[in-house]
Image (cartoon, rainbow, N blue to C red; front, side):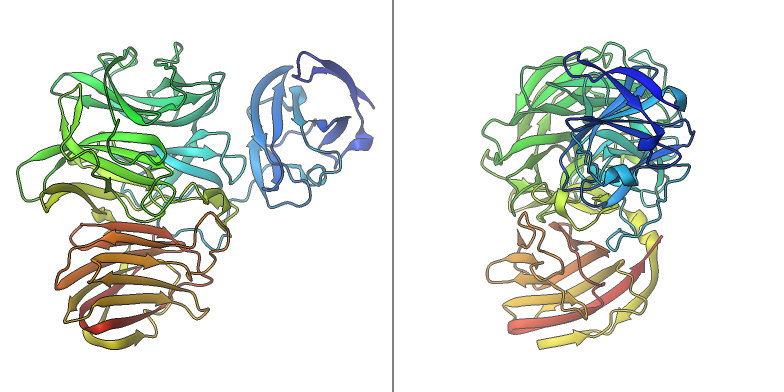
Length: 598
């Protein structure tokens, strides 16, 4: 039996005639024909849910066209395995009639190993086999994740959308992935919310709840704003009437355009004082502010950023929130602005500005040259807050990675996780107003039985050989350190393989630091091996809270004055701790350890 097919190869209208023959079959399910010049087509008459695609991350990008009844219904880039298979990703084809379906692939040689490995299946094994899969930080089931998107609360659920590549664990093919939670800790994975279309891939954005039906889609509609990333970046919208389970894209997209090339990441919120919707949007190296009455038509009000803060890289993922000032009745507005590169330790980071906002213009209360960092680590980026959170909570979430090495970290089934959700507030110090962030209280629900160590003195060194039994890499440490006369207070987490992470309070330079240069696997490039630093105030007592997961450490100052987030990839969990002093003595007056788990 021979099957004759005519098909445009989508290259300048060129049409080719080719033949599919069972002699070319990989197995009884699939039939392949190589057309020359790296072009191939796959057909099947067997109905199954998935086409399992073999991936090799070092391979070049191939173009994949899913054709149904002679129409291209889906296209994406993919790194099909040339020499070996790193892992598989599933392409769900259950929506289509298999007899009308073909898979057209370009830029893959006929000799590639993928042709022997590609297969149909009714199942895809999502079982986690990764050494560094976090136990209580959110991560995708498989594939790549970066910026958190569209975070909104509705009807008892926190929605988390995120930048997602379902076709490899590296950046590309941006969709909005989707998960929901009732407590910000335990997450349910849902199907992809938004997929690429004729306007481009789906970049970052936000969601609002249109309680009063200002847009006309229905009272209580969940409305998503996102960047359509085609030849140019434009802003589009979609709406959901079923609590985010399905979205319909607005037929008149895009709703906002610009001649600025880097024009993206819309964050939308309701401004009660002016009775309008506000959108803050990254445009090159500034934040543009727009207003609207109906969410469809937008008027530019002002721009913020020229000469303000850090400009070492492109500004991205803005947010504008009003926060309480601790110890007062005051509230102030905070403009959150992510940039990459240009962070305090290199690469990506989140800066912010404190000031006033009247519905049209944001005014920074600090001198333009003052730079304020939300997190002093290497791995805290694309930070945005939840909309419509109950009790007016201001809860932020960040992507826990850095663009200088994000595609190279030593995981395969998935890449990237999020920071722990953090509650935000403001405090004053030396005449300036700063933002503090602390773990949401829900984190404490993960705590197992407390392991309390007796108070001890440190004169030179003090070792704790075992933090607790059954250490799987997910735990929390709370400690209070009282200085006597030490010039430097140093703590170290380590394991039996020689991996170690140092935490230091240097009282002479007034700097807190984390040294991960010997933390485990640090050899995948991009400046991962690093020491990160944050300014501190010299004082007699310090409180430190460490949230440790399989591949991350988040260090929170007990008073909320700094946070430092760093990835680590140890060969085994750090289950020992040492303390040592330089130039004097200090006391550890309390040390409590909690095993964390879901």
